[in-house]
Length: 289
Image 1 (tube, rainbow, N blue to C red):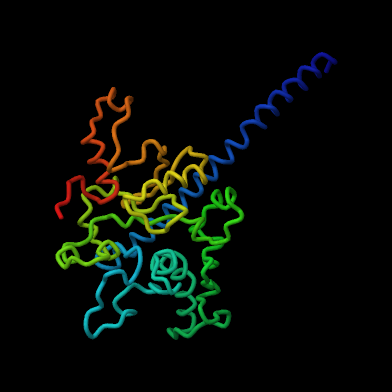
Image 2 (cartoon, rainbow, N blue to C red):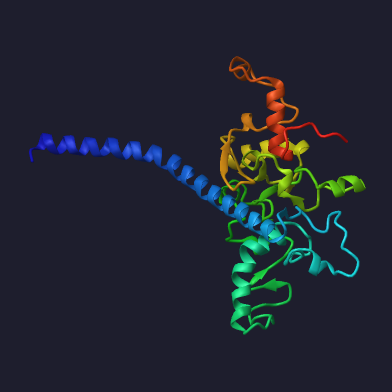
């Protein structure tokens, strides 16, 4: 190889290194976003599995909420297993976390004990299979319920609930709860049959400030997109199990107005509101009080 050929090779390698150096952070960020989307889909899948086990009813975002335990039944026999594992009734500390994590770890151990459900030797009070609950969400550490991108953007926040997601509480409650006029009727189990298009109804979404989200708290999601995702996108998973990365400006807003671009594309205000109602409540129809 001549000196000129060697210099050409060195120059080419330098160019490739420069390109790789500028693109690697973007590639890494994209890969991390896809990994977290996969985790969010696993959370959604576990939630749907739990719903199927409970007569096709989605778990309540928080128990007991406004659900009344029938006479003669105990809370533990009426609500899902692990519903109050974290003593808050929150999906993240109870039913959904339990179905996704604890059920996979603790129940095989119980089977090994020939049907005896006694705690294993490494289980202390307030813990199951080594997952110990505390107010800072230590049981979430290292699980699919934590966003590493959120931790990276706010290392000072030690509460892992902050670095997790929010469950949609605005999905329409069953008629029985609406008829009773209960105060927390959205904190109840909800029939999948109420949802007209599961592929357009959000189940879980990026949110730091709360783990139970209502449609009038949409600004909290936008704030999370800015803090956690550099305002590039919002991670959401839908009732049918698929996930999407949504641009903040495209987040369905029940009170939103079409942008000039949407107007030019022929998208009208009523169409946007129908899409937003489907996204939040599970029905594009205006609900009568």
